[in-house]
Length: 249
Image 1 (cartoon, helix red, strand yellow):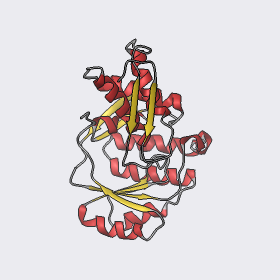
Image 2 (spheres, one colour):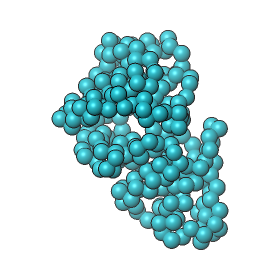
Image 3 (cartoon, helix red, strand yellow):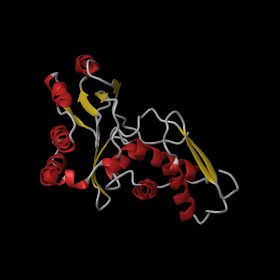
C-alpha cells in the first residue's frame, strides 16, 4: 500500500488486463473510506491459465481483497471477502452469476454447494485430499463475455435437478452429468470426460464454462488418464483437492 490515490496492477506472465485486481483493491478502500487517502501497487502471478474454466478470476479477486485488507492490518471475515470479490467480478464482467461456488471453494477450501443467485453457501463438505485431480487444458480460450445466457437455457431445469442430487450427497454423479450437459450446450467435446470415466475416474466433466475438463480419481487411475489425455492436443496437469483455504503470507 502507498500513500497516494493511484491503484496500479500488473499481471505477470500473461497478457491480461489488471483491471479486476485493481477494482478489488478499490472496492476495499471504498468500503473503509480510504479511497484517495491510500493507493496500491498490485502484482499478481498464478499457476492457473486464464479463460479455461478453472476459476482463475475468482482466485485472483479473493487474493486481491485478502491482501488489501491484510495490508490495512485487518483479519477479514470470509463473508466480507466473498462479498467484495464477487461484486468486483460482476462489475468487471468476468462472471455471469457472481460465481459464489468458485469463490467460496477458492477461499474456504474443500467442497461447497451454493445458491449463486441468492449468494448463499448451502453446504460445505470434505473432499478426500488423497484423491487426485487430472486437468486437460486445450490450447483454446473461452472468455465469459463470449458465453450467451440463451445457450444454457435448454439445460436449466436439468441443472437444477443435478443441484438437488448434489445436496443429497451424489456429488460426483452430479458433477459428471453437469459437465457433460454444459459441454454439449457450449459446443465442447464431451469425449474428453467420457474417456476418463472409461478409465475409472470417479467423476469427470467440463469445468466452469470450459474448455478445460477435469477428472477426479484414485491415485491408481491417474497415470492411465494422464496418458490418454496426453495424446490429445493441449496440456495435462495433475493436482489434489485442497482442504485448506486461502492464506496471506
